[in-house]
Length: 440
Image (tube, rainbow, N blue to C red):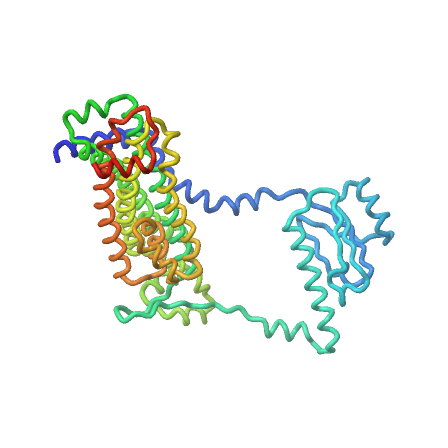
């Protein structure tokens, strides 16, 4: 145990004391926030030049109803001839010509857009959507209903759905499925990131030390199994440190930053929801209950701390399981390129687990999602994606128990491969060789 402790300390200090680790740990939460708002910023600042479209409307119905905006400007054709307008648009470098047939109301497909440059899905959807609304309005006029627009305005309604979790153990509380899905996807991605990146670090470290023959010197005083465990636990401690630092930063943001930037009236509604106030009463007063419920979850430090704690448990268990396999592969090969074939069976379950997390948004309790969250090789990622949706505690406990039991078994197998593989040089091992080493 003393030797394992020395190896753990060495692996931990070698990585944590680097400037790159400190900078990455502190900047990663900020990077995650920037990535989450990047699509909005790109859409905001990446708008192209205004595009002018000449409209030839043979029906005389659609053109007056088309609305121009910052991206598209509609101009009625003067000649009304398609070929003439197509030639003119090329000379004047307009975006294109929109032709609308005379029977557009009865034949909605009688519309064509001719462009002089590459079109985009957004522009086409904008044009098609406006034409659809105009045709629908024309068809409704055939029913001769007086004050139709006024009636439609009175009939139109927006439903604000409040979701409650019914439980015998505690009072029903409002919840947000959108927040649960987003938090679940983020946690699943974090686990995916840690398993792949830190597992590869273990493998690369062993390959490097094996090539320099350092391992052959170390195993003269340390058992190969102790060497492997020290490396795995040392890197696991590095990953756990990063998770803890991020967890503290997230809890501080939840407890201090978010409440300070929210308007007082919204924050008072959020505090009322956390205190168990009737959401239907808030909805009746015109409050956006969906947004308030989401903010109530994001500012609940107890909920955030619980998520971070579970993330830490599944991260450690999942990393120990996969790091043992990566360590065995690293000890078996001489070059990183030779490890590609052996690491494929390791990465397949991780990729499958990440794919299944997308199914959690549709149904976190479907049979496929359930079993993938129980099977140890996929449970760290899938279970963390399910937990924010609120699942029974026994499922979490069962998943953790199976994960750590499988880790112990996998360490035993990996240790047998490791103690033989570190002395093997000059030959690319096969799966048959690994099986034979496990039986030595």
